[in-house]
Image 1 (cartoon, helix red, strand yellow):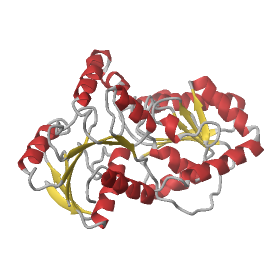
Image 2 (cartoon, one colour; image 1 turned 180 degrees about the vertical axis):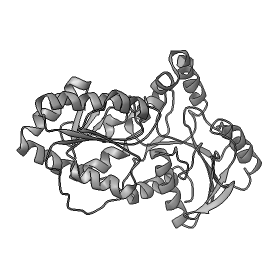
Image 3 (cartoon, rainbow, N blue to C red; image 1 turned 60 degrees about the horizontal axis):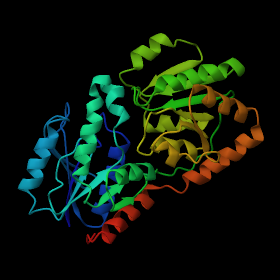
Length: 353
């Protein structure tokens, strides 16, 4: 088959994240089965207009906003060439809902993201997003979590398959840090809410003075956070490559994920894989990737997050049990499983992949 993927970013885009990693993995699975895959996305500084990577052809046109118009024109112009069009909806879409060969792939609704990133005046975008999504409600749709499936069902979607994210399993014996080490890993932006992770750390430090925290990631809030929260036990590490990321996770004891919403949260499973219980906010997506009371805890704010860490750290037997549980939970999610399930749901939907 010849397959077109429409996503505003590709995996080489510096702003790419979990959605792009997911797309790369399922695209690789399709290529491995002999299919031709074209990934249409926006351009970015230094990007080639077209290139091949991992057997996938990247075509880049326009900015993150205008790429939707360019992508729609590309899909319409080449609709006879492609046997399947996979459109990813990220707040706004490429509007291929009227093309017979198109399906929808969506990781999460943006909803709270609009006002968090753009201010209260952007509240109307919540309505716009839902109105646009309703145009796709008769399309076969793939999403990554039961939370997003519920959101879509509330908009009238009925033909939905859930294909969760995965990870690349690694076998490593972790050497933990000598003192309690909390970790935040992700973009430093309002939707990820990194300031609450730091506030949790300081609350924990009131009871466990030797605690330290590593903040891994960059973003628009970095300068603000560095200037506001200067402390010798709070370390801003900036961008960290994959090898260092896993080394740090190996040394840490808890991951804190205070996002206002997630599609799933790959970082949750990555931390669980290395034995870290995850403290996450009780929000869409994290309710699916964190098994509350087993691989970590879902909490409703800073106070509860700090309390859970303190209680668990002071009960080492329970901590070690949850650490083992976290590893077991993570073992259920691999990219091999994701690729296989993605292909299977496409076959069930009538596509000969």
